[in-house]
Image (cartoon, rainbow, N blue to C red; front, side, top):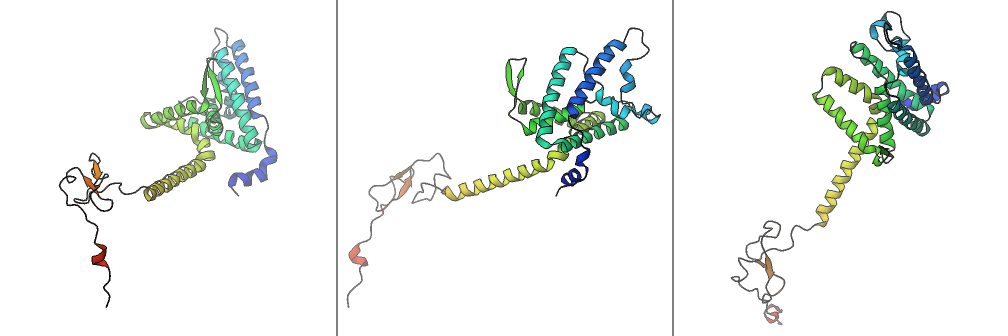
Length: 279
């Protein structure tokens, strides 16, 4: 039994269903509240009281550890619609596939990683966009052939978008600064905890299958097809050489072009000479 199975048996009754819908509704409310409250001349943005700012948390404003999840990671209304729609689609699909408890744990790990990075990098703003990005990666891994329509016209399987995302993360991890690297780590740590073992096992299984197929091909494929009776070269060692069989030689004897005309013909043994003599 895995640790996750054990935790689900012990704590599964405390799982919160429909977390995705709750986060979406809260983000919509906060989004429109921000539009109403962010009036010209205001001393600071109204939503700043909800953002995760480590020094404010240490000063006693502990609610920021939770409220940053409902701060919408978008400013445009049209863009907000698409972001929330896909988050709803992916989050509910994961909850149906895994169950409520496992989905809760996945989000909880992503939240903890994002919060931890914000304290390591106090100047780096924490956003729930990283958490939603990890939901996207999990959805693309479980449903790679799901199609979305870019600009409502171009059908694209979500696995290709995930590949582009992984390539971007890899480039940031290789060439970015440490703040960017830690943010990437926060984005993928829950994905790696959930799928890392399975990915490693798949890689090992694929390697074993390749080795087995290579061994079978090595057994089935002959070392050569044609071999010169005189010099011993083959069509494997000399791929550009032509080989011919001599009709005047007894048996099947192949010769390369260098010895086809100059070889001594192989003569079949005389049956009378090889017959046993009677006493």
